[in-house]
Image 1: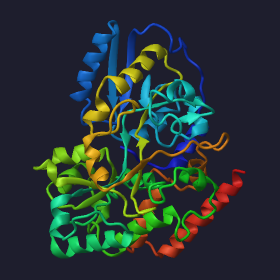
Image 2 (image 1 turned 180 degrees about the horizontal axis):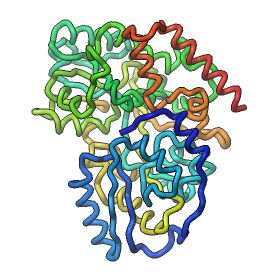
Image 3 (image 1 turned 45 degrees about the vertical axis):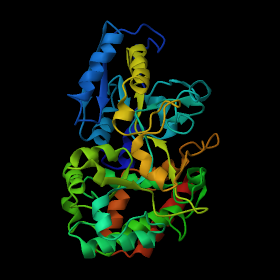
Image 4 (image 1 turned 120 degrees about the vertical axis):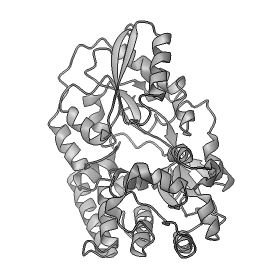
Length: 425
């Protein structure tokens, strides 16, 4: 799914450019063939096949073809060196805000879309233009096996990282389950930890402040808090014995059957874990163990955003697909996610967060000229915030595979971050 480093993407993209194409615009006739790229290799021949039938029935004369890609981030970034990257595609996570116009067609202004769709104020948006509509939305936290946690004596969500680690230790001591599964080998799951920013402090301006911070891994800062939790769990032996042998698809079954207790993943994972479990009521979801003002917080944000290849020769049909997928396919709800349509209700899969009194927040948009600044700094510093690469190094250091202590590792991250930040001014 999501692999390879942001720096590599940045270099690839720097060598690209929009060479145009036959641009009929998004307001043309909805007809003809489009190719839709997807990362959902598991349901492309089943669920997506039904989507194709429904869309083509609504728009006679159209044909939808899918290309499902396992190494989505890695392969698509290479294809973006050319014009051949489909008509509609989930915008790769590593595309920074200022690169959007080079590769994607604007779908409208923020003002035109903000009352219809969630997440368009802050995500895949640049200079008031929206380039993508979320396929679904997520809250952030830990998916877990309730039976295992209860067997370890934990019946309420931990409120601090220390309480969380104590819970993991109890699981190790009292059950046969692996307390926390990192999915190290597949790497992209480690990037999920980045979505916790804002949820630790409950601050909607967290990402704006991250772009202004010269030392995000200093004690007390959000990145220090959640990356320390990962480091400490690994160092205490509360994760899988050999992270280099993890398997994403198998991990769903392991958690569903109680052989794994916990994973850090967006709420999109709940349905997939339930489907892998003999009893879906065993699957729960807890907020990150930190409270502000006496309450948990979770950031609600969009998953991948469907965008239109700027080189597409059938932008009208591509635009119709994006709107239909968001409003009529039912994908977000069926996958247990948050609908991108503002008028739709929150899904039942978030009931555990609601029961814990969790406050749902959306991040505020960055000031003009600072859109995507934190991600740009990360790319420049060769710290792949969403990729999982640098968190593999955290795991390596914590398990003794490298010679760095936590302080040395975090100091190095702070130094590289500050230097990159300074170079971009």
